[in-house]
Image (cartoon, rainbow, N blue to C red; front, side, top):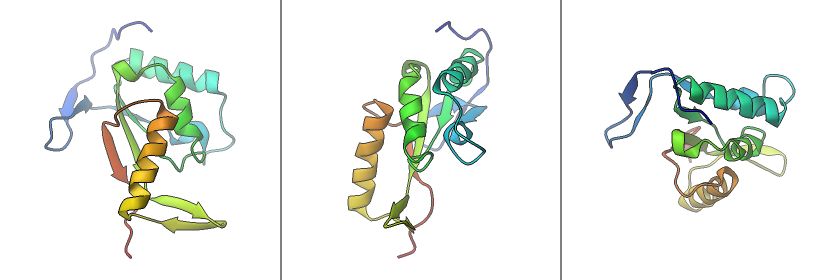
Length: 133
């Protein structure tokens, strides 16, 4: 992939030193919710175009697809150029949507996301919905 020829302003996200492009790429629509899923080839080309344009912050969730959006980003081949965010907290058990935030679930969800994304570290891991239990 070619290096970015465009500079997108970078901003601090939170208080732990993470810096991201001020413009991010939300990836939900690539795999879910806005019509049928798009082709992997087209969406990987879109990811490469965004990164080539200076966008370095990519956001996904384990629920998108479900799971297929994280797999798509894992295939994108841009890890060394981006900060990745993914979410947890919505699961489907026995055909029923459930919001979960218990420690065992969070750990299992994180480990599964790492495998699907084919990475060793998630830059920003956050809860999609608050578990009120």
